[in-house]
Image (tube, rainbow over all chains, first blue to last red; front, side, top):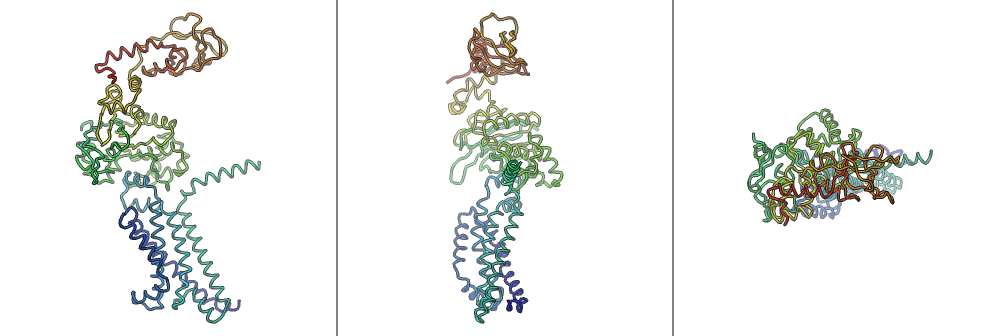
Length: 228
Length: 371
């Protein structure tokens, strides 16, 4: 553990950089993908274009994107912006598809009833449709965020600092401990982010557990009955 | 102001692909009435209903509510001024019962606390326990969900209620309760209700007036339920109204002048007696009653064998239909009449009931025009 003890401020710094490069694209990607998905739902033209287009986007290798983006954006090759933009594109690719599913899973009868009660379109979207899409939206966000955490490491190859730097550096200098620490922290970050999103989904959807809660109560009552 | 709440004037809906959902519809719906749109699926009854709150925009003609063309008001404001109940309730699954009911007042800017307070009152109005207020729709039975749907429609106190097959997805027993409660509610509230159903029995039971729609969105007949059963406008209506319409039309004929006859009764303790005017010769059918005098079953003449299950009962204010049914379903052929408390007060004879039907037929100018 001598390497870790000597380098922990550097490791902490890299963890922070890793987190920013993975979370920021999830937020930006969600901001792009969710409205786009809503537009695509029930549109005979937009839906196939966007869904197929986003799948195609995902087939571009990440390293290629990291190298090409500076040419398109005019940024430095080692700039964090390249990674953020590239990963945002991947998040859009993953989220668009699952967000379309999320909106399509919302009961149309409920939406019709909302309109019939006098909801205007924007308010209906924000307070009814979005709320009801949360379970599937969160599932998509969890996939995107975990995939991002692992993909950020690739940036290290072109010199963008992240936990991936620990792999490239450890490999070059043959420090096994550095590589192991890099892997372990990546896994921990992925797990923490996933838990956080799961928790967020839980808090936003008390109504989803409404049915099961009564079952739990009944089971508890049964248990008490058996114990007595 | 006239006493017409909703008026269709040549209102029609043709879709871009050329299918006609509703032909030019002319219809006047009186204020405070319960009007039922009934017909087979695809006849345009729901489309017509939805033209009232602009969920469907007519392609020809106009719809006016309280003298105002519905297109002269922004759609969302128009909709907030009408209650809307649909099949499968359409409750918001992510809101509690009380917040579901409070939806329209909240949309109108009523403060949350006040809107919830009113919502709690409405729970009682539709016969739901206050303890359900904090539940989510998924935790309610189908019947409870529909009740919440009705409460939600009433929340903003709208003069007009639109109900789109509200009871068709619940089981028959619950449906009967809901139908009866709707009639009770209407007696108290006097709203203008437009009710869509494909069930002619429901239409006849609930409606002050019934509009029968035929395929292709044609209005086949618009009449009181009584007229509909007695004098269907054409073969389509006659067919749709169904086979028992002659019998069912007796529902609208009161049976107040039928003579009441006495009947021998026996109580659980074995005490024998007679109810009704006069006395009865021995050796006839004997009615078993409980300690309160409510009918329980019949004993064959000569008191031999086990008691037979009794028929339906004729209650005070009942129709010729209920009297005739009571006679036909009774093992003795005698219709048992009961008072408001359910005690037997005498019997009616089938022959006299049929005679009353015949008198009624002759008194009617149109007659029971059987095809």
